[in-house]
Image 1 (tube, rainbow, N blue to C red):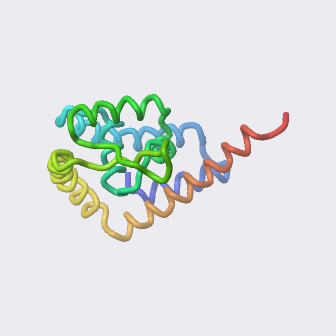
Image 2: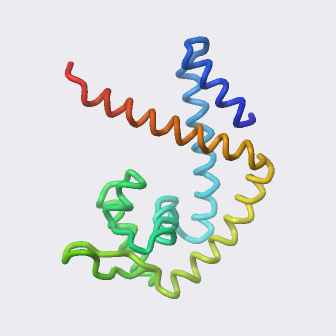
Image 3: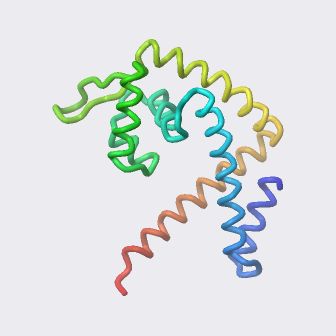
Length: 165
């Protein structure tokens, strides 16, 4: 199903013309398939899906901390800590001093950069093919609509859990 079609279906759902539960289930299943593609790559390199996502975050931000990773991936501190311990053990990352005594920044070692570079080569192959297949216009449209929907969903979830019953 093309992304524009998914967005149109979601819009009709919001207008009450379709079964919103079925649509959200399909939307969730599609997102899970995207995650599954990255899980396959992670497995090839002896990583969990979450460990791969942690490595992506480290690669994108040289000032990243454990708390930042927890906030971005919605993972518990203990989960991220366990992943970091494994990455440190494998000599892929090191912790360095941050803004204060407690805060530690996470950076790649040379070994970690080489390891992640190999992963990026694999992911870039299929990412480029997928985005070329969808096309720039539809990709940007889907991205904007997904970000819009995610932000709105989080705001509504927060309203729901913070309401006084």
